[in-house]
Amino acid sequence: MPARIAVSLALLALTLTACVAVNPQKSQNEKASAVNVQLGIGYLQQNNMELASEKLNKALQQDPNSAPAHNAYAILQERLLQLDKAEYHYQRATELDRKDAQAANNYGAFLCKNGREVESEKYFLRALDNPLYNTPEYAYTNAALCLLKVDRNVRAKEYLRKALAAKSEFAPALLAMGDLLHEEGQYQAAKIYLDRYHLVARPSARSLWLAIRNELELGGEVEVNKLARQLESDFPDSDEYRSWLGIQ
Image 1 (cartoon, helix red, strand yellow):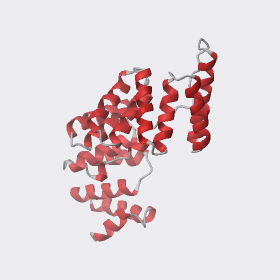
Image 2 (cartoon, helix red, strand yellow):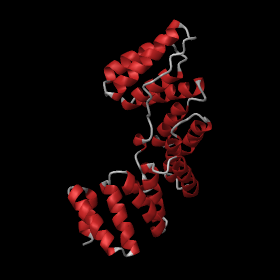
Image 3 (tube, helix red, strand yellow):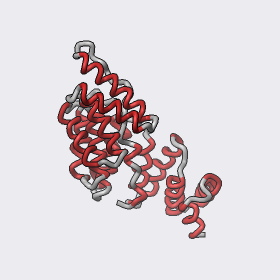
Image 4 (spheres, helix red, strand yellow):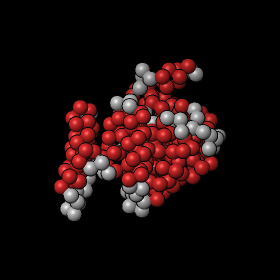
């Protein structure tokens, strides 16, 4: 997959929910573990790896069968580049609670980023099997981006459509669809998605350069000049702006 299509999976994965339910019917150790998971996630969100590790290790000691604890600890290990440990704990999280959509989505993204694109799809789909999963657009978009890496464009496009059906203004899916349609030569259709993207998200150097190239194919000289001025104004030191100067 060309790099220009590869919206970073890091933006769509490794999701953390700071609010972990503490079930009053659980044992004291299980309740304590849930509290430490909350604390560990908070420290992860603050990028305090040392305290996150302390709290999450304690959570796992208190409740070794806590899927949220394994999921959060896997994220910590992935950030520390301990990939074998990360995979073990992602696996444990998905084994312990097959309905944990967040853990399934995160494990799918982990597999995709580590060259196991085909294997990752089943975990994205597992996340989507949970009717209570409240951000299906993430898993659909992750599945699409991963399939694009192995040139399975038809299924990828289907997933992007489903992501946008779930959330019509989901910026990563809009940009990915615009990119894919541009690659296929469907420039007018690509323009629709890119325009929508720029209505709901702050333009990036990449999105502006893609829109410029798309407008060049459509012959939209006025729009090209407008986008180029914005690229120059907002991203004068970017590779994309240098690419624009290179075709002048």
